[in-house]
Image (cartoon, rainbow, N blue to C red; front, top):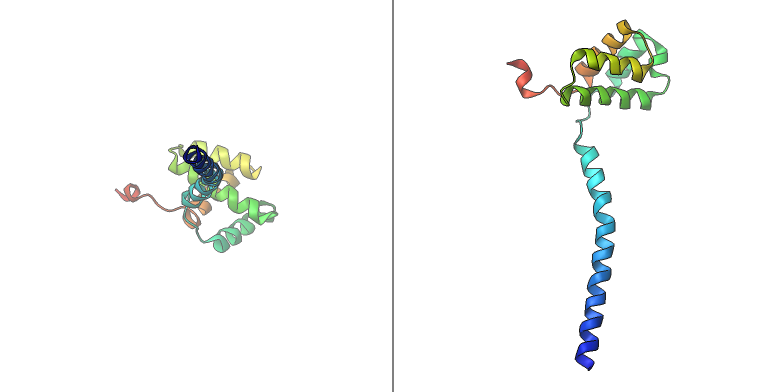
Length: 119
């Protein structure tokens, strides 16, 4: 009977260990996924260029940077230039001309050029 109790207790210890690691795993994965999304670009030059177009575009610098990286992800996800411009209009709450310039600035300063882009 003592052996049965020890086996049961050993099993409970394993279950609690599994439960704890399951809770931690999704958090680690989420951090890894965001870290691999887009390499960090030249944020200072990006913000300076946006500010030169219209200071309102960088009223909240963190949001402006996040929006710029979103435009990079749009390109990586295969969106057309027109779709990216429309997204820039929405993200930056601006007109078409400024959105085109914002997209160009984000691409030049924040986005990594895909290897096939030059061919």
